[in-house]
Image (tube, rainbow, N blue to C red):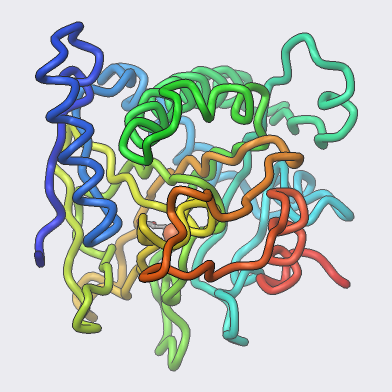
Length: 316
Ligand SMILES: O=C(O)CCC(=O)C(=O)O
Ligand SMILES: [Fe+2]
């Protein structure tokens, strides 16, 4: 399979058992093959999407010294602003050609988790940015909850298996700005080849060229969504849990051709993370003689910590 298949979340929540089962089959097959799917029928309205992009652009256009006020030391970039070139893909030394912002969980009724997570950072200059970020976070989290329910069924688990782990989970909404390229980037790219860390990623803004995924043959394939679709992919946490039945596919964002160097790219991934206690131990029903256990037992929190060190976001 070379193209990213499309599915419609409305089929899953339609109340029609046959449509629901078909959705599970299609998304399951997509995630066992290419690891990516394009999803329509999500909970983001056009108005919310337009407002979000307008606010994000305003934020990244703020003077550098204003943005720098929001780069907080000591939290591994988990909230607020991360400046250009800081994050690099695992195993690379060149920083990616991007700056980004992190919105984190809005914890409800759980003082222990409220204390565990860093607080969200508020942008004083743009009150609407804070508001729209929160609304988008909630809608993508809701979308992801249903996608995980479908995957639970596909993995022969209880439909609600993930619910307790994702309630007040450590998910991150990351608006990214890839600025115009002003000089020969040498080896640096907008986002070097990587797998995502989390359970699943829901990506807004994949309807222009740039995002590429690696297929079974090692070829890079353009992944382009329709305007109303989110691109969704499996992250390393879900691949571990499923003993690599569901594939965390390597992907990247390539630099545009020279005549388009002057244009920015904006994309907004939502990285769905569980609470840090969630065990990522390979599921028993994904292990057999043909599929021996591939990964050591680990919790989501331990795994995230390891990976943030590898990305250059926290020190050992
Ligand atoms: O900008 C994009 O389209 C993809 C970004 C991405 O893969 C990531 O941030 O993990
Ligand atoms: Fe990614």
